[in-house]
Length: 521
Image 1 (cartoon, helix red, strand yellow):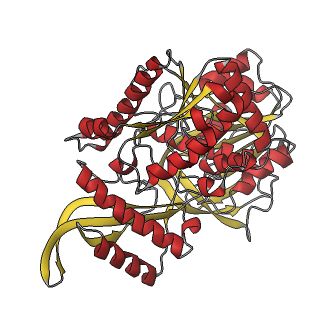
Image 2: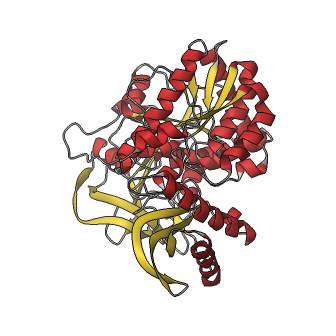
Image 3: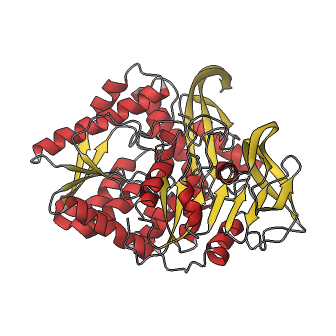
């Protein structure tokens, strides 16, 4: 928690998968915000610890106000005279708590919807284009009676109460999600709430964040040594650079070679960080133990958890050999966290276990240092620029901790890894050659463990399929496939088939997220 000199927006999280997108937008507007679950918020409310709060946002969530013991806030919040914005579930909760009526809708709204302006509002200034707009809906409950003192600002074809306001009490709500990019110009709703209604000032920057992290680390660690799990990716690299600046000789960066890295990547990482951190950097070759522990495992969740447990066991053994190091630092991001477990403690769905989060054993002999766990990758890159980190490191595509092990569905072995390394290297090198690498959020090859018949040199082949994945995204929470020119795809495919022994067919993944994920496992 920051000192009270920073005005803030409090986001009350009711379990939405996209709550952090609200925070990301607010921080991008140079305004400080905090996320709290309803229980924690109510505690602070009852104990009068809502310091320097300029506005409150109720997030969406999977619950219904018609259910028993639905999550809610204390009615005291409505007496604070602090502006409130409710989104989706938050929209329904406000109406329910203030005397409106909510029912299970006969017709649900999921996906794109068009809403129409009924009245002008400060909340919707410059939001509508010719009195309508396309938004993203995700709800099955509907407000059918609005509370006293409220008026309808906008409606959709299926919901007559898409935006509500009580201007006198400064309470606003919308049924759709303005925080997702599918809502056209949705950022304007949050921007208007922050500046026109809450009267916030732009006084929060990445420099503030660096200072906050520095204070947090010093407070937690004191004079103890910290073990930093350095994979060489953007997140762990920025973390290592930052911790090195804060802790100096009390930092030990450890790179574990799992055998699942991309072609020549291990030697490149070691060359960079040995030069940068010198004696503070250590390389551990643990290929044999990872392949041994994953032998025969095909289930993706079991694979991730096995990798996470193996990492921790290696780190624990290493820490014991170095006089029991107590702290382990990881570059965990919010998308990792929210897909593995609920940030707020609410009922969010586990999509996949990130090896830094859901893949960890329940009991570990470390206290975790995770200063990035409420942040997105683009925010990490901004921090990296502030720390003057080389752009070649900062602009690297995301690469999962389990590495190529989760880009081979099913059982893995060294032979499959080697095949994938070659195919993936060709794909990435071709993207760079064509000046496409920096236009794509993430790109990689997948070795599909299905063999198909082919013809090469007039001979029959029976080899694996190589899948290619390339997506555009802002934050990794949602993504769309990259639209290649046919010529590019054709030439890349030809190279992979010609130069990768064991592959005779290439396919391209055109699935967005959702419904798919970016990674295959």
